[in-house]
Length: 480
Ligand SMILES: Cc1cc2nc3c(=O)[nH]c(=O)nc-3n(C[C@H](O)[C@H](O)[C@H](O)COP(=O)(O)OP(=O)(O)OC[C@H]3O[C@@H](n4cnc5c(N)ncnc54)[C@H](O)[C@@H]3O)c2cc1C
Image (cartoon, rainbow, N blue to C red; front, top):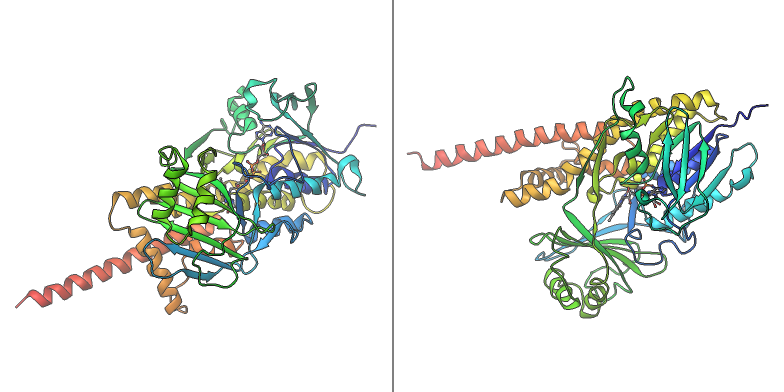
């Protein structure tokens, strides 16, 4: 008898790929999860490297994890109670409750490791009534036949196009799949292959195209043994996310608490600034100038790690013309990578998986249901993730930074701060800036984008009215 269990192949075992594997296995699919890099499930997140920064998870992602039965353990994540912000030159620290009383910070590597460990429970179809998950590390997609639904994977290193960092694995292998999912991050190989495929180009929907724009900010990760001694006027900094900013140079430090007691941070600078810092003493000079609240030991500890650490780009904003092709779909950063300016990348990636789960329904899925999934997913999700990328750009990303550099009066910021203050003073009249509600809501990004636009127009009208009033006042004062 023919096997009726659908086979799903997922490229990339990052947060999006591993969570999608869980949602699909729980609906009776057999999943092959292919990851190019070696995975150290236990050590992930404990070393400093480009993938070991901490991320904040918003409500939408926590619900997506919950939907697949994944719990963030207290040993992996920490609940943020306050965000502490200090600007160079300001008299005081600003400490305000986190937008979401239960928002979490977790190391990106720990999150992926936690999800891969959850996938192991499905190895060999151990869970009753479910499909299975088979993890293959050290492989990358080398050939795809979209019409025949066949994907061949080669050991990383054997295939120069994979750009992998993993060890060369065993023999290449070929899978005949019902569905292939690209969860292979910003430089997705599957997305590239689909965009070049002649059959996809000739399909009624036209070619699958994408554009990418690099963030202007670069970051280096570091660890900090203790925040004690930092002149923060708060007793317990254990559950607080600390942001130190030097707006003039556009340098920031983001410092996250972690469960191991060590603080983990990222040092953000505009493109090129890290390159001009050649030595530890260059970093000591910049850190002490920008962040005088750090004590000598702290700034030396941070500076010592930086010259040898490569600077990574904050990311690439990625927009795809659609998220599907026959028998294939894209999720997470492969579909919609975004700058970290609003902290929505992982949250939207995990929400993709919940959308997949919702479209499939609770029961075991058939091959026919899977066949319809890519187009349904694209229809349900495309506008929303493009809105998330747009918001990231318009919010506090590179475009805003460029506007600030170009104009001494930053209207965007003036509107935002003005509305924030008014919403505090007159909450019944003025709503919170829509951008600030991103983390405590599951409202679709398109709706948030619409609200941001409405508030922008409203803000302009208020600013215009104030300018007219001021002009009228001046005219009255100078006119005889
Ligand atoms: C500094 C910084 C701060 C951030 N802060 C936040 C935040 O606060 N909140 C938030 O929500 N998001 C944040 N993000 C974004 C977040 O990290 C990403 O959006 C998230 O990791 C995306 O998950 P993913 O699984 O789609 O992709 P990835 O995490 O990139 O995982 C992709 C996986 O695919 C593998 N892979 C790649 N190519 C191949 C291939 N050819 N074959 C097989 N496997 C492959 C990779 O090794 C990797 O394991 C931040 C990002 C940065 C850079």
